[in-house]
Length: 160
Image (cartoon, rainbow, N blue to C red; front, top):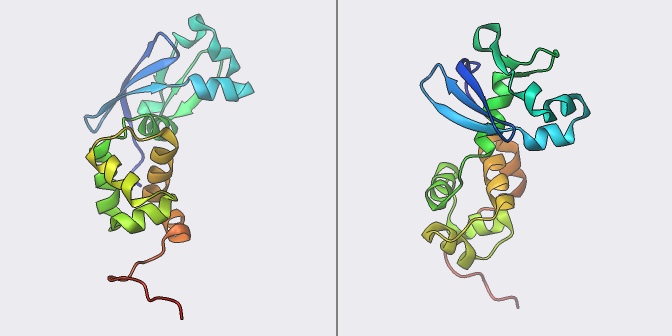
């Protein structure tokens, strides 16, 4: 997690409940707020396209607001837009390396087979639920700690 709070440089409302966010650090992302609007009664007024189109940057880049008083922090928008980034084989391999997981340990942590892990590493489509789990393990050390089981090299001993 970042040490400093993110700040927006600009924001633009796009059709389909999306925001184009440009950050002071030079990055840019699209943020689809469809799910947030659908799941939150407080955000329901933003379902109206004319209301949503009035999005503007507030508090010197600390968030986005609408004339009806609804606002979202830049931190929340960065989190949502980060979850919406493509999670492909390169992302999967980076996740595995960042946590120092062998293929077997990654398989154990995700409840998958080693073959599936190898397929993800090669470029097979990664289901959204797996991407969510991987991001959660990267973002919160307690999540990986709860599911990590170290593997010792070699074959397991045969039970007597």
